[in-house]
Length: 526
Image: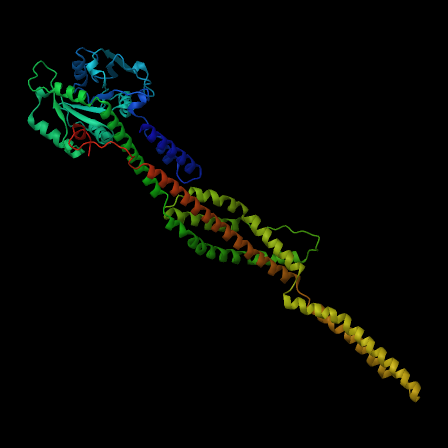
């Protein structure tokens, strides 16, 4: 079961690393998932063999934890006295045959007092005396937090004077579901029944329906002492089946906590419906921005068209159409899109990153498209009907004079032939004048029409630049929509992967059910 949770955790961390790299989660979220607790009691032992039950005394300063462990051992193995804080180190009391494979991180042997015994009846239990959690020394608290994931059963020790201790109580609420709990009201020889009932009510509020509370006293008068019952209870829990149940429950509890964290992250990723509204929001935003850009480009395009029309076909012009003003307007539109996405609860880091290349290429796109369209317009000036009419006039400029010359030649030949046959006068001066005028007019008419109707290069360049600008705007618009589409696909993939991990956090098959009437069930928080 522990390996199953460990495998799930590794899968989660790999997803978090990829999601952070692509901007779907921030560094803090990724670190939070990376810091999810992976340690467990069985990590201290050889995984191929059964292990003992790990039990720890935990509580505030001066409640008598060390005295209880010394009483259990029958000798002074844990430091106990009037100096505060009383417990500064972890005391580990175990059977001589039990070997711990590795200690928790950052806790060398110098911070742990080891004590062995030869009582085979206690072979299956390792006892720990934890440092005082409410100590003013930060190191003491760190030791407690470092050991907690490796403990099966926590014996929460209080005294009549300190059973309402806030610091230890907050730790109980934070760690409640990860451990089994027993409670000891120590120094009971100084306690009252009202204090016992009040402490019991606190435990009810914390989630223990039937908490197991032992009254103990570390004095010679122990008429009402229940220490033997505490020891017998622990001995009854130190079985392989109970240890396995505790491992399974701890693992499932960690999965449930991980599931809640992943579900919260899933909500931070935003909804698919919110992403689907981005294209419409962008198009509305871009429509207004494009109009502003067109108005701002009106005068520069006119000047550029005039300059362009004056160049020969081999000369080049330098385009400076996309200036800082235009770049700022386009950046404002993209920033507005990012702001809309942020308001919709969509992580915007990935969107920002994918829009960067488009910001950088905007100048090149506009200048390339406008120059290309202008050159095409100058290569074929005028509109289609205009160009067809000019071609027709060009043909007339050749055909009409040749036709007139042919007709005049024919008339000359016929006149000459007729004059010989009838002996009448040959063609006169009037015919010569009229023939010359006919030939001249047949050539000049299409010539002047071509000259007067020749397309304006400036106007052609202006139309080409405007077409190129619209083409560039469409390309920029399409580029942003493509980015949004990619974001939608990536978002769907992130949610799919996250849902897959969340599904793995469900209750594992073969999980041992704890009897609701059992002693162990009373030790677990509801």
